[in-house]
Image 1 (cartoon, rainbow, N blue to C red):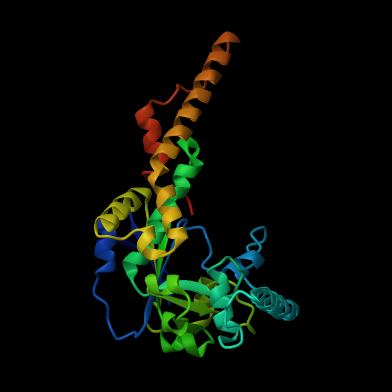
Image 2 (image 1 turned 90 degrees about the vertical axis):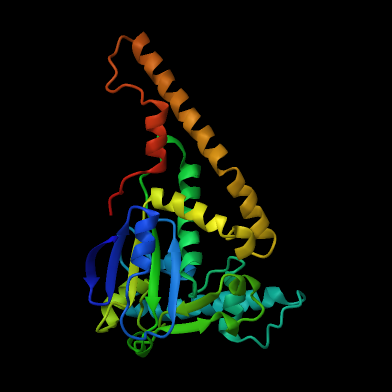
Length: 312
């Protein structure tokens, strides 16, 4: 069984999953009580906050501040309204029923085309969430490339929408509320938002501070790069792909990018090895001793794929 690292707070627990088998065992553990709706969200880096696109834009990494000050709440509402007004005006003539979907419906449509919104998207299916977490991690490793790629891990979040969460002001919108957003239905999706009047920008911070449940309602599964590779291979063998999750041109484009992922990572690795060899030659010509030998290609590949845990 994957190790339960700790109960970060009474409402939050963590599983470390160095392998795909251990992740599946943690996912299949016995649960107690009827929690109703359970939502899942995958993210390609465990360091990323559990926050919507709009809220992420307002998080301050320099100070680690996760909440708006009281005097900033009015500006936050104005920001949200300006986004909605501009989006609505720009939709005129595009055939979108702007007058019948309401603010949340407009935000749901906008966020799937890149607009900043306070809505955070989830799925009702754990393995869809795991696919997003694992594939995002592997794409980041291939883009960073070579032995310079950090030893990162992905996170799958499991959120039980318990009464205590809703009573604290958390909002949950099932995907069927937005019939015009095709991707949301293909991904068995749902949307959530935090209460606007309390200043929270991070769901994890909100749960830790506001929810006093008798059992954890937020669980984090940290997936190593090894678990991610095995997981994506397993899920793709069972028919899951970007094309099935994005039934449009973006799905086709993501599949094309995925097809060249290993080639991209290999080119980046070769470039790094060539740079190392040039550095070694320059050091020899100048009569300097090298601090460390050039890593073998096999060792470099192991470092690229991040076998161990990263910090934090």
